[in-house]
Structures are given as structure tokens and as C-alpha cells.
Image 1 (cartoon, one colour):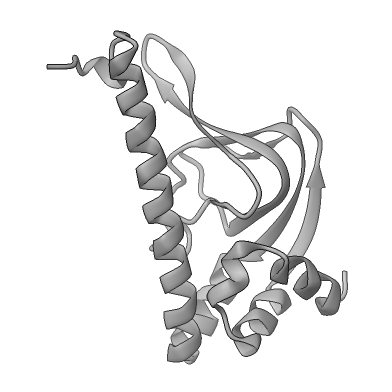
Image 2 (cartoon, rainbow, N blue to C red):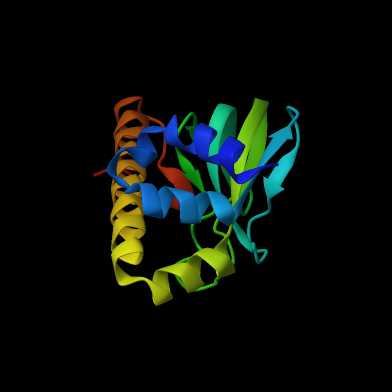
Length: 164
């Protein structure tokens, strides 16, 4: 897919609102668009994932394996949200399985290439990391709200933690 097509899709996302044209063009150059059907696995918990993903359309369920309970859906993500940011922040294994719950379109960004772009261009790196920090803060808030909802329903908390 041409960089112009990826750039057009990328700029339609709220993630792009804080990024310069230079940064958006560089991101587009390290990216491709993928379409996945419901039931597809984007990546699996514990595995190394060489890419980051921005969700353009559809829904993806983030699941974690809980001993004695199996795979548990922890969060559902939608348009404009990041998936698989671990490779950019240190190359570690991903911490959840991403299961496509509704057919989706994703922008797949090569983490090694993006990491190199950030290292070579500090302004680009600052812009990208600021947007990722915002996305992670949003994800943390969503997770906290989900935990509060679980406690309010009287259900036990995940991983055997009991509400006080």
C-alpha cells in the first residue's frame, strides 16, 4: 500500500492530532494497513511481537491467561487505540492476547523501524512517545474503571485479590 494511503488513514485517527506532518509521514513509511476477520489473533500473550498496531475500525478484545480460569477478557479496544506497544518500550513480550472480536482494519507499525526513527530524530521521538504516553494513560484509566465496576458488582477481583 502506498505511503499516501497509510498517511490518509493515519491522519483520520485522534492519535494523529498531536503529531507534525513530518512525524505522520515517517510513521506512514514504517506502516502497512491490515484487515483481519473476527476470531483472528493479532498477537499472543507471552510472545515477542515485532509490531505496534493502531486500530482503525472494528473491536479487539485484550485477554490474559489466568491460572484456574483460562483466558479472561480484560478490555475491549476500538478505533484509534493502540495495541502491542511493548516492543517500542523495550522489546519485551506482549502482556495480553489480542483477539479480533469484530472485523477490523489495523495500521501495523514496525516497532524496530519506529524505534530507530525516534532515536535518530528527538523531536519525532518526543511527539510519538507523548502520544503513546497519552494512550497508555487512557488504557490505565479504562482498566481502573473496569476494576471498580467489578468490585461494585460484588464479584471477586481478578487474580484472587479480594475487595476490602
